[in-house]
Amino acid sequence: MLQERLYYKDPYRTSFTSTVIREGTDEQGRPFAVLENTAFYPTGGGQPHDTGDLSGSAVTDVEETGGEVRHYLERPLGTGTAVTGTVDWARRFDHMQQHTGQHILTAAFVELFGYTTISFHLGQEIVTIDLAAADVTADELAAAEALANQVILENRPIGTKWVTKEELGQYNLRKDVSVEEEIRLVIIPDFDTNGCGGTHPASTGQVAALKILSVEKQKKNTRVHFVCGGRVLDQLGTVHGELTKTAQLLSAPLKQTASAAEQLLETAHSLEKQLEAAKEELLDREAASLAGRKSGIIRQTYDGYSMQELQKLAKKTLAVREQAIVILVSETSDKLQFVVSRTAALKTDLRTASSIALPAIEGKGGGSASTVQGGGAKLITADELARLLERSIPVYA
Ligand SMILES: [Zn+2]
Image (tube, rainbow, N blue to C red; front, side, top):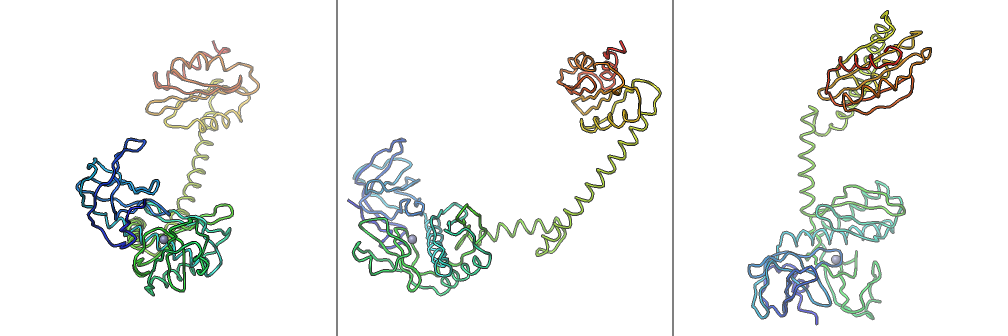
């Protein structure tokens, strides 16, 4: 038997007295109480459950199972106990605003463009609806948002009515009703009539405002992200705060942060290009200096060169030499990296040198007979590694 649902009689009611008619635990061992009557809304129809308090025991979840409303409690109260219930009004009213805003926005999209809503989600921060439309333009979004806010501003009454399946034919419904009995209609005059079991404010004005935040394409549908009521102010506060910080960092007026950020990115991009060109020039000069040495084996250590830089340097150096071997080692605070490379005219297998040297730095490496590279821990100095590699080259030994 369905209990008396006070949230339908008066969605503004936050306190009530009742009696525990049954207590139990669910499959997860959570204790719950079923009451004679309740103002606690159970999760359903896309609206999340209420929270609150039952005679000092916190109500953490409320759900409807097999026609009974289960109040999940911090601690059991005892069957037959008279209880006083208090619903967390801030949470409930937020749900009423978001949920009713969804009715209005859904109706606005149908009214203006014939786009139906196929699903909706009331999240902790954002609400979404999925429209059965592949392409929704920015103008259409703006028009639907404007109509929704117009309906809110007109403060139209929101009525509810219990009807039978037979009576449904008299109403112009947005979509088919899924329940067979206890059909509840929610009516915004001359705008929307919908089968709905949720809680709604007495008039549209209490939704306060509706703002679409973004859209997301989803194959044949479009997901619209939006907020209503108090969440509009929350969003404005958060985003405005972030934007103010960004504007301060950019030393730009609040409304010009995008163009200031764009300029900053352009500058960064051009500096990056200049830096790359300067690095390339530095490697060219370094390579020319190394290639100019008289010796057949060119050995050099560096601070903080990347493996890619060592490889480039080896290639550039050997490009202007007939016969030479180049040994380059780079060190960072805790690592050593090396490249050993030779000109094609020499036949030495450099892999031998690499395999002898690698254990000294507990390192890993690879390569071919003409070029090897590797890296490991800084267990010896960069100069010691360079000398070890040189001693380990077969032709040199
Ligand atoms: Zn509703």
